[in-house]
Length: 86
Image 1 (cartoon, rainbow, N blue to C red):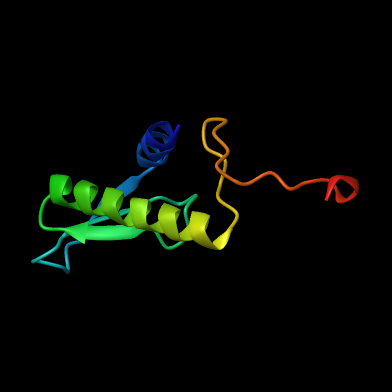
Image 2 (cartoon, one colour; image 1 turned 90 degrees about the vertical axis):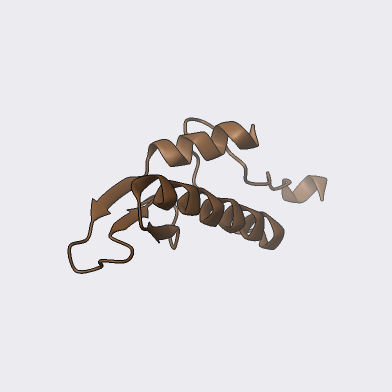
């Protein structure tokens, strides 16, 4: 499920070529995942860095109980218990 989630997020990535950044002209981000962005000297380098950033973002979000976006029907958020069951 985690691999499918990462793939779903990477499928949503958007990339740009930045003319004013000669060393790292490629920029990528995943709009549904706030703060997940990367740069690279090549598109492949940018993609690899973006995936690493995404993985770290997911781990941190899961550890701290942050709400994560549901992607392709994959929900990694913890279900909350009803008050009467608590």
